[in-house]
Image (cartoon, rainbow, N blue to C red; front, side, top):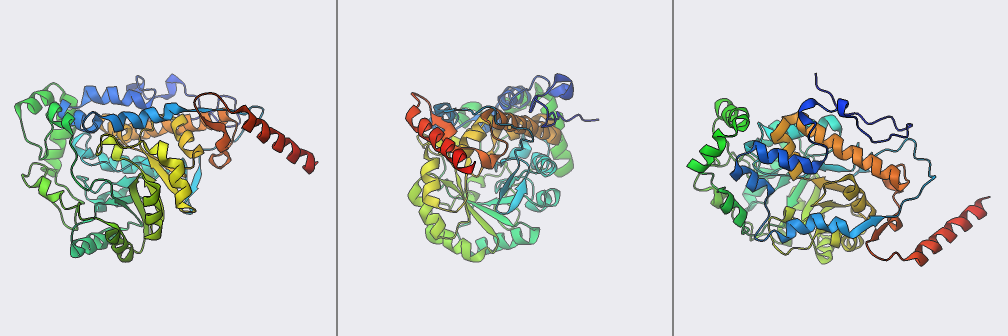
Amino acid sequence: MNQKPELVPASNDRIGRRSMTSIPRKFRSILSLNDLEDAARRRLPRPLFGYVRGGVEDERAMRGNIASFENYVFVPRFCAGVNGVSAAVTLFGESWAAPFGIAPMGLCAMNGYRADLAMAKAARDNDIPMIISGSSLIPLEEIVKENPRAWFQAYVPPTADKLQALLDRAKAAGVETLVVTVDSPVGSNRENNLRAGFSSPLKPSLRLALDGLVRPRWLVGTFARTILNHGIPHFENLYAYRSVPIISGTVQREFGGRAHFNWDSFRNTRQLWAGRLIIKGILHPADAVEAVKAGAEGIIVSNHGGRQLNAAIAPLHVLPAICEAAGDVPVMLDGGIRRGTDVVTALGLGAKFVFVGRPFNYAAAIGEAEGVDYAISILKGEVVRSLAQLGVRSVDAIDPAQIVARGTLNTSVLAKDAKREYRGQQVGQ
C-alpha cells in the first residue's frame, strides 16, 4: 500500500513538516526536487538524462533561471495567526489545490513508462493542472481520458488546413485550454545532446546499448515494456494525425516550419479556437501587449527552460514588467522553480501561477505516478510552510512588499507601510 507524505493539520504548529516514516521507503533519499535529478541520473541512460537535464550552448539561460530566485529575499511578518494556511488558488475561475502545475515536456515516455499518463494521473489526483506536450509520445486523447482537466500545448503547423485539423482533434478529445508555444522559431544549438550521445532521430548505438545494460531498471521497466506493449514510440500530437516514429530520419523535418509564425498566425489561431487560449514563451513586455491585443487570455513567461536562446533573460527578471504590460490578463511563470520559496517569490512579484518541468519528468522516470505524486507533495508542503513562515494564510494574502531584492533594505518604505497600517487600525477602532 502506497503511503503519501501528509501535511500535519493546519491548526498544528508543525505546518508543512514531514516525518521520515510517512515517506515511501524507496523515496527516503529524496527530500527535495533537487534530489530527483541525482536519482534520475542513476536511473537513466546518459543520452536520455543529458537530453532532459541540459540547456543550450553554455547553458547560461538555464542556470540563470535557477539563479534568478537568489536575487530575492523575504521580509516575514510574525504574530499573524496562520492557522488554516492553504496553498489553494483560483485561476481562470477554476479552483486548484496549489499554485503550480506540470509544464509541457516532450519525449517523457522514453524516460519513464508511459510517463505522460503518470503525470496526468498524479496531477488529477492532486488537483493541479498539467500541460500536454505537442511533442509527446502518448496520444493526447489517452492523456485527456486520464485527466479531463489537462491543457494542451500546440506548436502551430505551417498551413491553415493542418492547424484547423489539429484544433478539431484537440476539441474532439475534450481539451478546453490551448497553450500556444511561440519561443522556438528555429532549432536550438544543444551541444550537450551531442556530448551526451543523444540524437534526433534517436539512433540505436553501442553507447546507448551499454548504458541501457548497466541500468536494468530503465531497460526492463521502461524500454522493454514500451516496445513489447506499444511498439516503437511515435510523435503523437504534432498534427491531427500520428506523426513519425522517434527513429525516423524525417524527425527534424516534422519539427520544422515554425519560422513562419507571427502575430497574424496567433490571431488566426484565436479565430479558429473557441476555448481558452494561452500564449507561452513571452519575455518582452511589448510582446505581452501584442498577445493581449491578439486575444490571449493568459500569458506564460518562459524561455523554454533555457533550451532555446543561450543568453535569454530569466523569466523572473522580466515578470513584473510583463504583469504591468498585460493588465488584467493572468500572467504565469515557467522556469527555474525548485523550491516552495521560489513559487512564493514568483507569486509575490505578480505571477498568478507557475509551472515546473524537469523535476516532474525525473519523478515519472523514477517512480511513475507514485513518484510524481510524491514530488508534488514535496513542493506543496514547501509552499504551505513558506506561506506560514511569511505570515500569510493564503496565496492571495502575499504582500509584494515582503518580497524584496537582495541587498540593503529600503527601511523607509517599510516604515511608511507600517505607519499607514497603524493609522488604518486607529481609524477602524
